[in-house]
Length: 116
Image (cartoon, rainbow, N blue to C red; front, top):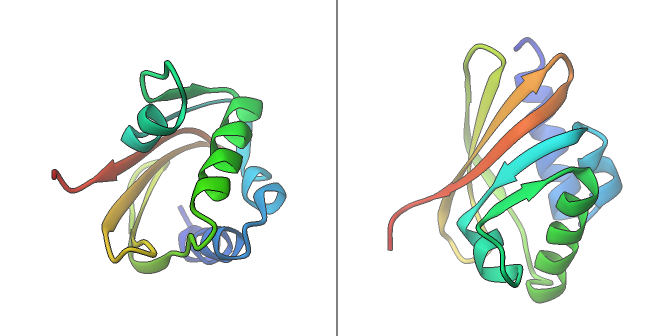
């Protein structure tokens, strides 16, 4: 992943500006995203979000409920077609976003958190 640092910089900028169009431009239409936060925010959700439109709806709801959302990148980790962005959220919590790419687009993502 030659563009890992560039991707992470754009990712955090888009999140901090709450610019979902810029953020979603990097995700495939058929993306699958999992997160325990999705399980809490989306009624009847099992924490799995399928498709770009559903991912937008999830993130819109998250921003509506957390208007002070802000991320600070702690580190990025590169694998084979995979990028992990370790960041601190607006509450000081450490989170990892694990993203799998098919070419330039994210096809699978996972929000992972420290156990309570």
